Length: 219
Length: 304
Ligand SMILES: Cc1cc2nc3c(=O)[nH]c(=O)nc-3n(C[C@H](O)[C@H](O)[C@H](O)COP(=O)(O)OP(=O)(O)OC[C@H]3O[C@@H](n4cnc5c(N)ncnc54)[C@H](O)[C@@H]3O)c2cc1C
Ligand SMILES: Cc1cc2nc3c(=O)[nH]c(=O)nc-3n(C[C@H](O)[C@H](O)[C@H](O)COP(=O)(O)O)c2cc1C
Ligand code: FES
Image (cartoon, rainbow over all chains, first blue to last red; front, side, top):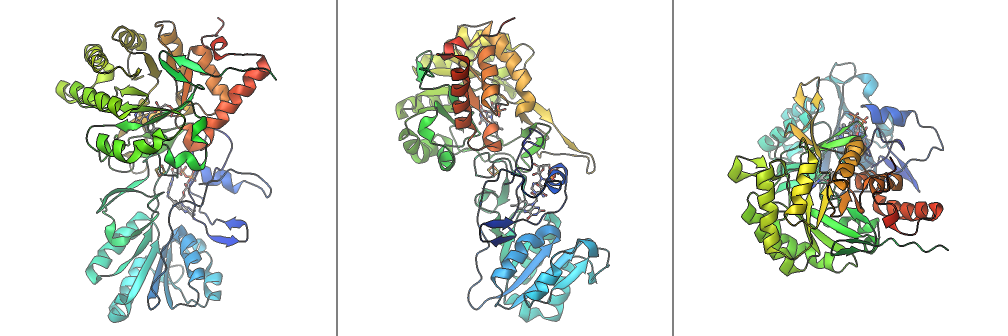
């Protein structure tokens, strides 16, 4: 949870994933969304901002024999890239979708990890036209057995998770997703960030942000 | 060094200092132990407790608004038994007062809660009257003077614990409710609870909260809270716990001057998890700087 300013508006801290760690330095990769992130983008080197973290859980590592499929939609690449970096010597299939070519980030770094990502853009300006899930579906049709033996890890917007859940149900895929939710405290006290699961409401900031895909009940 | 007395007597409830937490913003205390030494707090007021556990509202439950936030948590809580078993032992191990905010759908439920909590050994109960009364078509207890009076009178008869009534600001004249609280046997009043509000996403044309409306809190409501504390201070003799948008010690001192004897920090804990102790230290520093020895010199010290 990062405070973008010292004033009263915006009031609340913003939640961000840890993108990369270099010694004591924490790097975040963020998208300009609204007021808070715009203020953040005007910050200069040496500015001091309050932060609380790290908070919540992490992606559980895949089993030793597991192959992994990573799926990133938009800024969901921030934690997915971090995971790819950690898993570097494993066999990884990465599906990465963004709105346009300009919004694709880290593609060179991804390639330098030895991963050849399946890129898609909504407008077709780079890679396949469509979403990362569309690309995954195409892949599934071509290699059905291959995919079901993989473990999924995904981060992206809600609509992406919803179509991923449907797909996962149909093909009996298992995996983990990192969710976003509006947050006030970030430490489990306000009960503002809950998501509905088969085990009742769970706090995204505390029990999450990573949940088993099949546990989430989408509205 | 100058001797500063920060202790306050809220009727028979004695606190070592005037800084408490606002219900629903501090969970059951433990989560904040990583950030603050809980023993230093004047009191911990825990999340509202009902007889049976409550699931709460669908999401999204919160949204940020200018200098504030809206919430519609829906009173999610572990229920009386869960609280006494899982949360209270830890809270009782702390060297601070434990105050339990209670909520019911009927007067009988409030009574049962107060009786059980008294036997369980809490230090005080705070009536959250901002919940719908199912026997009266769901109108909140805190907005209808007759049921409000009945509720306080009935709970008073069944408990000897210090009784705090938490006033709702969603009324035309808060002085009426302050007076009823005093007349029916409340030892203390606390105010304000959140102000009902609403926010709309103009692109989707949908409300930003699943519950459509929610309670506004944070600095945005502070001027209203200050005005209401001042009105109540001029109306009743029982002590007042002031809250609404306190982030810093200066904010707290404003509440004292308006007439509060103690203050509670709510949304401020989200902004700064150490807010409670920063406020406490700031109050002490302010008093030292101004040559004020006792909080009594501040409470109601408004000049006009
Ligand atoms: C666990 C987690 C990890 C995240 N990691 C990243 C990341 O690595 N990079 C990145 O760019 N973004 C990330 N986000 C989303 C990021 O928090 C929002 O984009 C950001 O809060 C928007 O703030 P704003 O003031 O610019 O937008 P505004 O729309 O002006 O914000 C208004 C309010 O809504 C909240 N809000 C708006 N959008 C979101 C959202 N998608 N998720 C949660 N709260 C939101 C804000 O925090 C703020 O309280 C993450 C969110 C969560 C929950
Ligand atoms: C997330 C949240 C949950 C709350 N839950 C309760 C509650 O359970 N019972 C209650 O009496 N007040 C509850 N409140 C109201 C606060 O205790 C307080 O009266 C109000 O937020 C104003 O203070 P603040 O501006 O410092 O937050 C809640 C407020 C928030 C923001
Ligand atoms: S943000 Fe407050 S409980 Fe998760």
